[in-house]
Length: 457
Image (cartoon, rainbow, N blue to C red):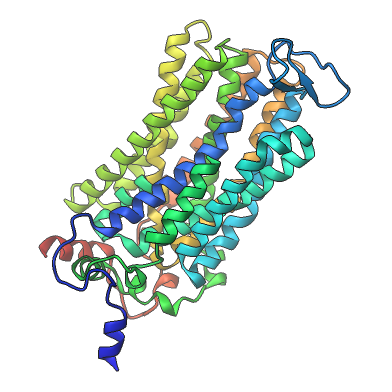
């Protein structure tokens, strides 16, 4: 019977013992990277497009919310107040607040593969419908954005589940950092159906050597994921979980503000043209992903070579993400007369804030690898409330007086929320596996010995 089970679990295309040219786990993590990239892209695209959809000085030529520009009959503009724009941008996070918690529970039952496919397909379809919805009316556009946000909410918890199942212990920080639109999203769904799977045992392409290598490095909690049970009460009572939630609220308050509001600030306050604003929205995100990848590799190196302990590494990178980054953000409000310096400071913000990923978020894999998808779902649901609070605050501050002084207040509010999150993590943050996460209560092995075993091998 065991031999039959072993045969059934053998990969379809690689039943030999040779190394493959490109390990399948690299393809999986690259697909996760694309899914998260699409996720972020759908969040920021409308913020930049809004500058063209509601140009300065446009006149409402009809009683509808749609009007024609004077330069071409093919270019539609929308007579939306700044407050309405903020409501539209923030509506995505109503949906994004609902689904992550639910998705985190689902990945524990069905695995990450079908959940990430569902989320990417849903948000891609909504992005395709966005232009049509905008022409029909504000409320249809808001509904589309909410459903788009619901689709996005499935992606991140599924990504953490997949990284947990597909990574070696000494690769986790790097993989999480790497992983951390419409038509492209549909193509992604087709690609995932071909190569994706929840774990190494259910993948048809992986070689036996790569599969055994991954399984060898994993803890028993991950290997025995079929025993998945959620200790809801202990999670709700865990100070560590509350600490991570509060810290994530601090990060996402700032990050969502950067995604949705900073393009508007550069166009309306600093006077950047639309093309330049679009370019400025692209460069920082390139810096963001490079810094995130660097942070993941750095974290793995510091921990694997025992230069710093896991928690010291996490807190060091958290200081950069939630301590230094807010300083650069506040400084932008005081250099309105120096456009070049403002751009440099913005790039510095995007260069520091992604270090939150291999610090706070990666600590989820330290404290509860078997519940990583659920925890990131809980954290995302809690923190994405900021997605409609931050735009609402901007709308209130700039409703009657859209000046640099009002934006400075928002910069200070954002920095204060982030620093509070940092202080919480510095005091209560830990990298120790929580007792409620262990499937075998007699198992007291920690992560570091497993990493050492992999190194010796």
